[in-house]
Length: 324
Image (tube, rainbow, N blue to C red; front, side, top):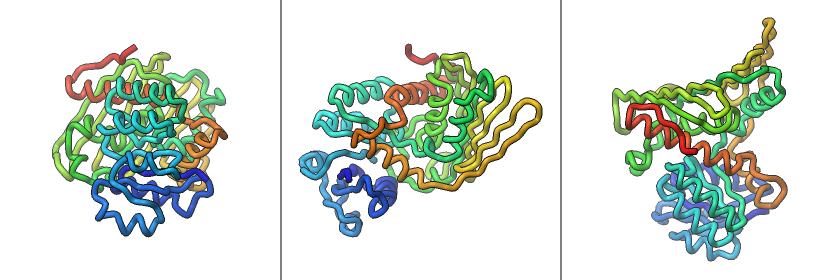
């Protein structure tokens, strides 16, 4: 059993703890850190973990073997580097960083310390996405030419903390809450992004934003792509890969449809899983030395490179070539 500390006990921090505590035989939370301890004291008691107000206290706890970061985005680099310097594996919620250079430095800090690093992209572990990866890897689609992804989720607008209103914490508007998951899928399926051209349209701002993001992609391997995200719309997820012999489409968490030349169509429906628990237990396996975490450090960095390029394209209204 891996003993973990959770840094940040807001809505998402509690969601992480709730996914694990009493449900996993691989990992549990034994320490929690909050700057507002009085608001979560009863929760910590209920879940059976020590509560403190600083990362230093968590790192000094002899029980803690790994640290989970569920803090505002701009804090990730400083906290992760501190955890890595203490020689402890670290898992960071998405977006891993807001800048490519920060993501690269964070990954390098973990590499230097010789500790595993993970990122919270639980959609990667949906059954539909696992099947999409299998179909693409099988070669049945032929030469991959294009990829499309769309993630709308009104839920992303329903859990506002004051810091989530700050442009410095949420560049690209819905990209930090929804679009980043599509970027992870693109990086995994199409490889590093070479160029993006983004459009952001907002008709209402504030706690109930009405906005859309549309992004054209060119990938380093010549594949083209398109990403769409609508923050106020009900949940909708689609990632589709197009080849010269067919296409495969992940719809929502559990459905995948493959369409091949000649009219053959195969629709598969899979049982739903707790993707957050699956994600967390994958990292527990990495910490235990059983298997590498499925999202590689290179993929983490490449995803943030694409994210930064999109935010820059939104700000400038121009296409952006990625570094390197």
